[in-house]
Structures are given as C-alpha cells and as structure tokens.
Length: 259
Image (cartoon, rainbow, N blue to C red):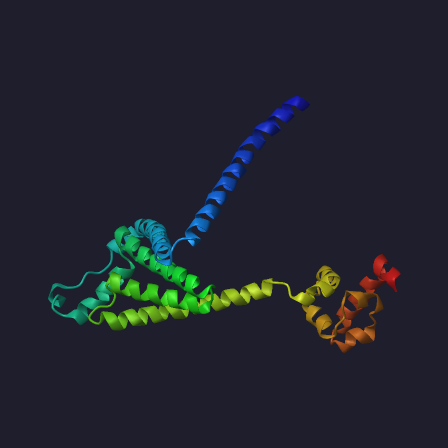
C-alpha cells in the first residue's frame, strides 16, 4: 500500500518538476535576452523594443476587436450629405477610431504600446532611470501618435494630436504618482523594526489603528514591559484600548518576566 502511494506521489510530482524546469529555462532566456538587448546601440534597442511591444499590443487589440465586433457593427455612419462637411464627419470618425473592428483595434493598440515602449526605452537609456518625467513623455508621444494614426484629429490633426498627447500624459502622470504612493505605504520604514512586537500585539487585539500613537510617543518594543496607564494616556489612547493593552501585557509571560 505504501509503495502504491509512493508511486502516485512520484507521478504527481513529475509534471510539477517539469513545469518548474520550463519556468526556470524561460527565466534564463528572458534574462539573457535583456542582457543582450542592453548591450546594443540605442537605435537598435529602441527599434527592437518598439517592434516587439507593438506586436504584443496588436495581438491584444485584435482580440478585443473580435470580442466587441457586435458592438462596432452597430456604430452610426455619417449621412451622405455630410461628405463635404468635415465638421459633420469628425464625430463619426472619432467614434470609429476608438471602437473599430479587429484590424482597427490592432493598429491602435500597436501604436499606443509600441510608441510608449520605444520612447520609454530611449528615455531610460539617456537618463539612466525610469521616473515620472520619462513616463509622462512616453505617454504624450503615444497619445499624439494614436491621434494621428487613428484619424481622431478630424479637420485639425495637429491640435488634436497635442490634446490627445496631453490627456495621455496627465493620465499616466496621475497613475505613476498613485503607484508611488501605494508602494510607499507597502514599504516598511527604517524605524518599523523597533515596533514589530508592538504591531503584533495591537493587531492581535484589533487595535492596529493606534500604532501611530505608539510611534508618536516613541513607545518602542523595549518599553512594552514598562507601560502604564498614564503613559498610554499621554499618547492619547482611549480608556478601553488602554485596559486591553495593559491586560495583554499582564498576561504575556515574556513581557511580565521582563518587568
């Protein structure tokens, strides 16, 4: 019976090992490709990054175009008498540019992603870093290129290209800053090591909102055995939470021993 179980386990582990080996090989290939690409001249690197990203973007756009094909077939078409009036045709062109079929969406996504990746690559190589400025410049370029290629510009393509680029840049800039803010909240600060046990205690008691009170009063982990009601009151912790904290310290054998 045990031998049968061992055989079953070995059969189960075989596919898992194969998957891990494939993942490892793919990671090696990816790292090798990135290393080779970084050694190429800037024009070559930018061209390759732009082309490969544009192909990926085109595939995504074509897929979305197929998924939304029923919607695009119901789009309005300009009336015959509007063919000589650019202002009347412009709204229809803008709608079709955004919600076209698979080929249109493939073209749009290829331009947006390819131009963005190419400019980002150039900015990173020239400036040596990826930051807000590089991200905004790349977004402006991709927005302007999208406007020109898709035909959204209408009668005034230059002005509309600038407006589209500006909107893309604003959106990308806001997204970049939000991402930075989120990462800063997830990244532990240097002084967090002095409040590790305190955080654990407060989390256990459901009082994690008072972590900032402990930091404000410099009540580090080493002060936990010495805490008193007056010390907790000084950092503006209400009576109920104070009682829970002091009771927890009294019941904790390690903290009680440290007194």
